[in-house]
Image (cartoon, rainbow, N blue to C red):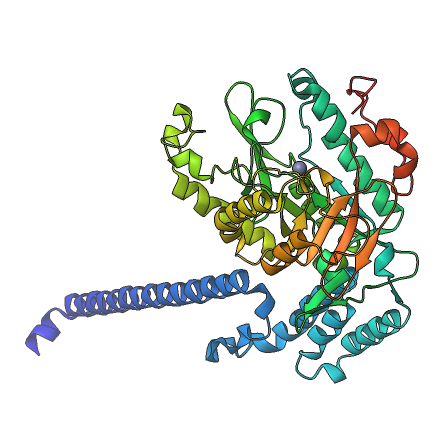
Length: 472
Ligand SMILES: [Zn+2]
């Protein structure tokens, strides 16, 4: 008490100082608590936000299920619903653009409560309406146009020791781009050969390709997509790879030894064109890739000779190749291409003229293909594209044809020869046979009239070609 009295001023100031210290301590504790709390909230938000993004990136098509994530999504689900519908509508639109109206309708009908969503019911009604106007294509009138690997560098190709052959049977990148653009403008739509006919209970049945009036279905194939050894340094791509975007592209070894990646051949060019013009592809159709086996496939050195120094065709330069790895890469590229709608065909193992070959020689060659190439393609190849265009029979049916009996027994249902004159299709319960038309330098130079149904060859013909194109 004394103390209090004696120094009331002093006591008062001490009390104030204590109070100030206590307040300061409380403030510090509070600030620390606030900081901890803020940190925790920030971390929690960051974590939730991050995982939500991951979901939407990994499963873009599963937008409906992404709101099942748990309690945290409570507030979002009402916001997410319209954007889900929008994204499903956009997906349906993409399917409808490629003439898959049934797919588009089915997708929209999967949206829970779609009946009460006007945008969806209107879209469905629109697709039903368009569907009712479609015309069924006559599969016997469908043309089949084909290319080889495209010439990227015309100086190298036409300056090489193979110039005459390239000038005759190859097409340049510029020509291909013009051809595809013009065919698109004329209403051509790429279809799969498996859309024309397919196997059902052991018999071939005609497919029904339904297109809007005025659209013209066609099949496209590319022969010898092997990037043969002899083509090295001649201005062609060197292999097909899968790009960072998940789509096929090409690698090309340049003169200075560097490797460039880009759309240097039909596969990536067509893929890009379809991405920009989905109505150029019927229900996701792509081209047919015809493969031999003797130099590997798609630019990968998969043939046995590359890993076997005792093989008569082995060269010391193969020593650096890892053939198992080449095979793994080739089959990964093929699998991705198949996923995108590309189809694969046998073009024999050794580019054999199957019309001239004896039955035994043809079998020996085909067994090599079935043994070495077919497994890299998933093992169920059923298309045969005759090397040099030479068929195993005349235009008559493959009745009593031993070569056909053998080829059918090893799984081939589709047979393609070359006849540049006009679309030609032969259908039987055993097979579909189709003639192909070559869009190359020789045909453009000498038979522009035969190509005029597809494009104007005079406009397309690359001025970089030496003329006259050598005669065959
Ligand atoms: Zn060929």
